[in-house]
Image 1 (cartoon, rainbow, N blue to C red):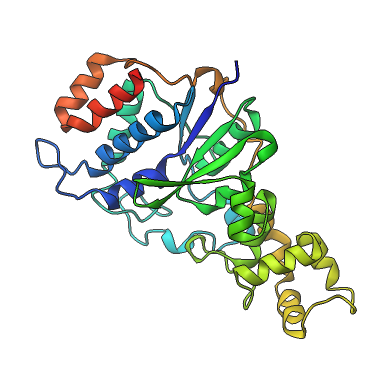
Image 2: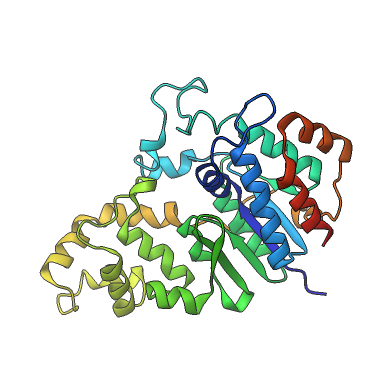
Length: 309
């Protein structure tokens, strides 16, 4: 029997929950739990609509890995808190979100929903590794376009991308990706290298935006073909494109390693063997204590109902 795996880009989703659910949603003691409850509702909807057999909540054990920063020092640099109680290098996040993250983790554990991170890697890399290990179809749920590079029709890997808050998801397969961006999955990573991404501190090639990047990749096959064309005076590049790409050669030599999602992360144990979506809570007493403490209410009820199917 072929099993369907769902991989959650958990931080991406609880950020969306945090900003999509009013902060007036609070625990009995007045503590905001909008991200907690919003994420539970989102998972409930995903389970009800897509019925995965296995599900893993993937986490950032290191949201700004040193090996990526060594290659491109500006990588996510603007997100680093200059002064943070967590110390240098901590990520800037809303003050009322930070305390909710451990609650999310405790609730997932009590439910029996697998969660997984890997030292020195981002959630994207865990997702990339699990999607490559999976024997059956994979649904990746994320608000981060970087994961479009993992889309692969041959292996039935697609991305479910929130397009309107958390209520509407767009399903991206290779056809949808080509229609939107003019590239396939691996091509999306190269498009992102050329275009850059200010939210990740990736400069890109100045003057080359998304559409131009897609045209260049289509014309020269891939990034390697485009770079080879710089040494060919007859290649169909405008003088401005040739100059910009030449000036960006140092960046283009390292950026693909930063942008590409790792697919060979060493993960403990056999995570896909322990990813079965539970039908009932693994630790019901602990879950009830969390429910009473944090006032999870209808959000938890809806998720438990979805799990039961």
